[in-house]
Image (tube, rainbow, N blue to C red; front, side):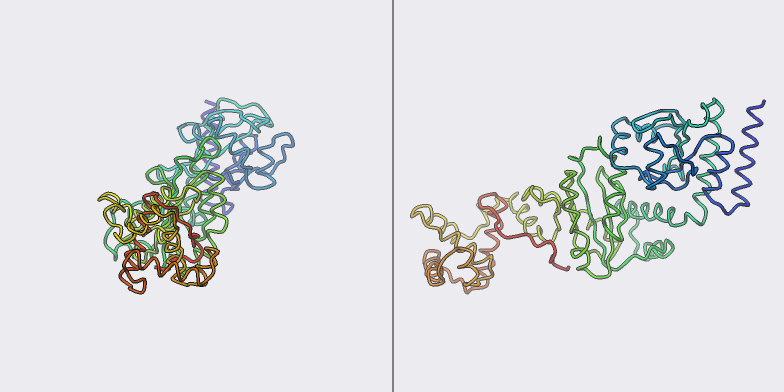
Length: 425
């Protein structure tokens, strides 16, 4: 009976705080501390402190990192993942006690659930006194009260983010197709969506999830792309980001992203711009195409904008019907055969000439040739191929032929990728 009275009294205190107090989560933590008699902390999915008992515990590394810095270091997060703490929190339906790396004192952990989704964690540290059996029930009651508080107005932005995530998932699943319905959903969410939307798809199949959890990586990537909203979809991290101007994404967002992805062995495909949310699934598929084709073409890169790989997407389709063997210009095959027979490099000269937009000076510089020597090469190329390099149609077919050869790995692409000045369509 004393335990029942204690649980009832605690519940009434929390209900009163929810109804009458304007102290929010911190008020609930303070009430919890007065009853549990041990310090309490609420952390989000990134292990950032949302509210906590403001007491110093000098010999507990994890507690002090959160108290001083407001978040756990990546090293402690990685340690928790290695020891399956994150998974255990997600999978446990009841509070549980444990003590892992960086914890001088044991904890009681319990997840905070809103609308069936785990959104945060409450933890109590066994510092002032040993845990009692009743503490498990007290933490459960506290967790429910925290979930209620988190749905109030001060967490409107938090819940709005969850609703936007659901909207994106519905669009990817094509459950929402009517533009008017979609527009109304966006208006109600009031998320400030800009007109140019890009879809980022991150392949995490080679990422070591034993170091950092997938949800932690999702939130980290979301912070690296301003205006981005992330979710885990089909075992990939998907971010939709909107920009006022199309070039903003390439001027500000990709500078540090590539190095971060390389460090964590993650690859990213980026769609062209989407201006209609009803078409978002198509642009998601486009980002997947960029990811697949880009990875095939160049594993040294980690970011693959579709605009830079669209021609190789065409080449991929051609490869299924014979590739360069079927679709290459026959005159180019004749030139390559001539080079092989006479040990010349006319094919390379033509390739560089087309790469440099038929600019003789730039091509000569790239090939380390005198200008007149290059002009002679071009004349001989026209004679061998029996074509005119002034003919637009012929040049276009030759360009396509080289792209097909690149895709078939018969020649190596030698032009520099132009991520920062990507096409704006």
